[in-house]
Image (tube, rainbow, N blue to C red):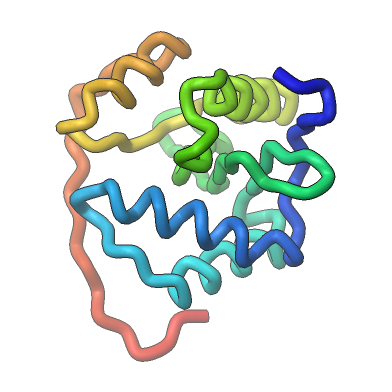
Length: 157
C-alpha cells in the first residue's frame, strides 16, 4: 500500500468525485438507483453539517480511491449516540487491495475514539462477499430486518 495514501475527512471540493463513487455503488445495489443530483445533495448535507455525520476518503495528492460515510444518530436501546455506516465504496479499478478494510478500520477507530456506542450497517442480502467482509471485520448478524417506507415530499431541508 503506497505511503502517500492517507485517510482524511472529505471536503466540499471532493463532492464530484464522491458522487462518482456513489454512482458506481448504487449501480450495483438492487434497492437504489444512481441519481447524481440526489447524491450530491445528500453528501453536501453531511459535509456542511458535521453533527449529521462524517465522510472519510482514502486519497493521495491527485485521486480519491474510496470513501466511507458515517451518519450520527441516537439509540434509545444503547442510551446514547451511535453511527450508521451508510456507504463504503472503493473505486472499481482499485478493489481487492485492502483499501476498503483500511477505510473500515479507520471508521471503527473513529467510532471508538468518539465514544459512539454502536456501528450499524445494511448490506445487500445477495452480496455474500460484502457480508463476509463485514463479518470478518467483527460485525455480527442481527435478528432485525430492515423495512422501508418511501415518502414523497416536495422539498427537504
